[in-house]
Each structure stands twice: as C-alpha cells, then as structure tokens.
Image (spheres, rainbow, N blue to C red):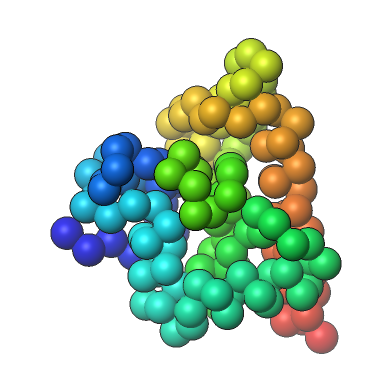
Length: 148
C-alpha cells in the first residue's frame, strides 16, 4: 500500500527497518516504507520534492537541521521530525493535529492529538516544544505571506 500524508495523518512512526506505522484519526496502518520515504513520496504527490520543501523551510526559518516540512502548501499541512529526518528513529508529527503534550520522563513526551488519541515519542519535552515552536513559526510566516 502506497501512502501519502493527508489531513487525517497524526504521525508517521518507524516500526522496523523497512516499514512504518501511520496513525490517522481512527486507524493505524503498517506501510512498507520507512518514514523518510513516506515524506518524500508525499511531497512529490503534492507537487514538490522533499529537498525543495526542506530548502524552503530552511530559508524561511534560518534553521539548518530538523526543519519542519510543508507537505501540502495550500492549507499548510506541516509535519516536523523528532530527530534527524534520515534517522531510523525519526517520528514525523502533524503540527495542526496536536492538542497538547507533556513530559513523561526525561526522554519521552506524550502527545495528545485533537481527536483524543495519544502517542508517546522518544524525545525530551524541551526538544519537542522547540520543534512545535519552529513548525508553528513556519506556519505563521506562510499564512501571513498568503494574506499579503
């Protein structure tokens, strides 16, 4: 099954060396691709390359690493990585689906999505909050530009 990130997507989580768990509103899918490849395919599906989207985010934010990606730009469908995007441990989180998040312990953060679903990810609260802030800033800048 080929998968493209969409508005139902909550998170794309590595499952093992060659597949991912994709969490949607009420479903969980096993996709025979690693998260990074799903992100690349999704960007291409919506008309751009992953590298093009990454370079755009880097330019807008002035950031070099772990930049959020605008998968689809009409409605700012933005996902952000929890680690280096190419890492086999990287989880991709959909910004606009996050309701809240809190620290579980020194190395894990619990995300509560807008539909009540919860996911614990291996990232410190501080790092997660930084990623949320960066993605939110990207979203804000792009929305302001579209209004001009």
